[in-house]
Image (cartoon, rainbow, N blue to C red; front, side, top):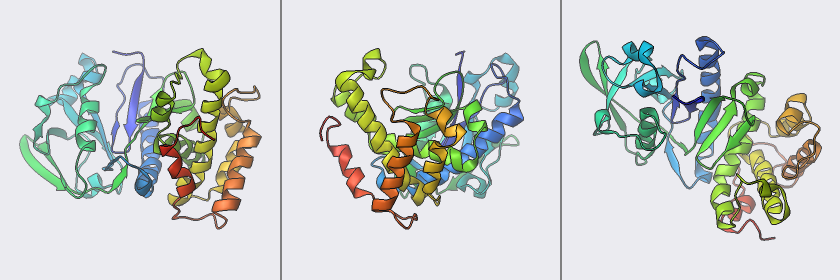
Length: 323
């Protein structure tokens, strides 16, 4: 078992094992569901801006291979189960509840799914669900009271991203183009509006396809050289683009984007921006507040969605090293 474990939200959320956690199960579940509600709304509201989409179901899944022997009783009917369901979500409206075992996803038996690399079965199931074509209902075969039942339901499209609570040391928030992670203690310290700000910035990286564009430039963010020279310039440009696009992602999700500037001037925003230490990659927190304030004044003076920020979306087809 890895020394870190994640809870994935959006299309599905992945429940944390009972080991390796200082927080109680109730505390983790509360953060999972809070982030799920915020992220589901933001992913769905901004689907038109995303090239890659997925159905947003509201399910929280977990699998037997996450756990030790002490938890296997949860999976007596199969290795993949629903841990919890976001209230009011498509899965909840379909009558799905926590504790139910999933045996078939559409026409794919769960027993036929083979996790690759470090993935667990839960992640493999996520990718199967994420590939569901738009407009087609999801059909799950569920083990209920010793009987097999099929539950079919439709789910709205959303930007394709896993949104996770991360229980480990490291950055407060980060993304790699496919997965968005908020550190548990950081998320727990924020209001719902502040979580939306952090999420919108990380989602902006995915929408603008920064990982792909950095790779095209030969930028390795795992290298110390990311802080110097051309690498630093490309990374700084990506962060500014993400801050600007976060204005529109917030507005589309029903938030007042002015909250973003307030966040970067708050103690929580100062922490998220690295504290008082200057960064080679990120603008200062006050500069970030100014950047989003200018974006609002120029492109979204009413501070309301829906908004189509074409001036930013077109950037994803341009090199990050360009002007």
